[in-house]
Length: 245
Length: 340
Ligand SMILES: Nc1ncnc2c1ncn2[C@@H]1O[C@H](COP(=O)(O)OP(=O)(O)OP(=O)(O)O)[C@@H](O)[C@H]1O
Ligand SMILES: [Mg+2]
Image (cartoon, rainbow over all chains, first blue to last red; front, side, top):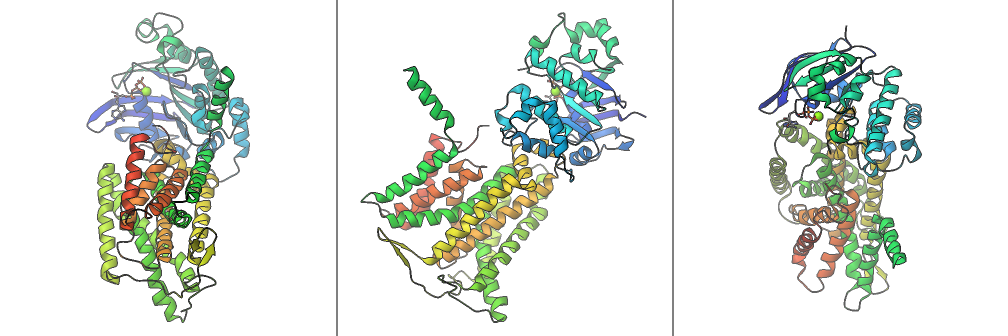
């Protein structure tokens, strides 16, 4: 049984339906990447999984339990943590306070976990009382990921972790993501840097207009001529041209 | 030239909220040194500012965390004052506690016993109102204006209730007159003003410590920053909202009691008429910023008190309003307002 199983998910905002029956799954230990054109509903899919957007029909099961109707804070407590695409830190809180908020539901002593985060992201550890709002884009992204890791998640959802970063920074973020996965966390990614993301993924999905388009192993999607033409662009490196603001 | 430029740059970088505050506070007392401004008015204004601050910090917290302009905030103040009167005159006097003139103060220790009880009742009432009215509206996704209008309804209802139960006449806590302290520069400080200032100082410090040290206080700031991120971090934002109401209403109720003590009387409209200074202080400092509300309250308190040297005291709210308008034109985000 898959760790995360999304089947025939229908969701949207107000009157508009954005996802018209999307199905994806993530197995234990996997890195799975979702790619697709802008506005096709990748972020909406993640928000529906974590409970920020209502599931209108279909099912989301996590570790075998139906979480489709659970509120976000309950889903987070069950070990499914999420880093949004934008606004993913608390800007007026310090680095340390951001991590404390990530561990809000823990009643044990989480200082060890915090030290691990500071080891993994030395930029954060060097000045823990800096306000998150004053961090650079890359440091913010690191903090956002560290915040989500404070609960020791089983599955981590990352929405475009490399968006808006310099090419050098993108490489370093991907390196950390790989490390997180090696430490035993399953990962579901949405990425614009499709080539880099797919090359480290076990499997990938191509979404288009709120529907499943393709599903295959990461390498196979990279080799797929249609995917290459539509989503990977002509050039080898799309990090500069593709990062949205 | 470059040296000058780097010097200016260095000063502007190290410029903090503390500098602004220091300048405002020193400025106010320097004002009192001018031959045509009475120092007594500045001191009086600072004490009035302390009361405004206690109310305005609650108002700004509720606004920042719930995105809710609580029009009933002044009437929570009124409730605090009248409930204290009720407890002192009812339950406590029935128990034979009728003392007045506690230490140097005009009121007796029964008022000190009644104060926390009244504050707790108002806080519980505010949470109950959230459950009964505001939460339902929020769950339906209504706009901030509809929420403000709902709280206007609550404000009118509370004021009516006070008028029905205690009549519209002025009332006061049992009191005994006490000598006024005479300070240099013809400053006369009533002893109760010292009590007001001490309580306000204690509460402001308590709010500061809660927001920076307590887990729930940090969760409040996190929710104010980004409610969705708070939710996905596992924070139960409904609980945060109730704590915010509890804290905000407790501060309001205390401000109401302090006002009743300071003015030596209470009226059903006392809180309602305090609403303009409260909002002016909160907006002046940058709405959503507790620290800003503190500084804003000081400015509004001193300015409206000093203005009475030249204009009729009944225009005090107009002075607060005038400052507010000038501020909004010059710097819409307020003194300490953040961008965005
Ligand atoms: N809060 C919202 N309210 C209404 N519509 C929204 C909201 N958020 C997104 N949408 C719309 O839903 C559609 C899908 O948005 P979504 O953010 O899921 O796309 P995406 O695939 O993540 O795009 P991108 O690659 O730009 O991040 C878009 O048409 C968008 O305009
Ligand atoms: Mg997106």
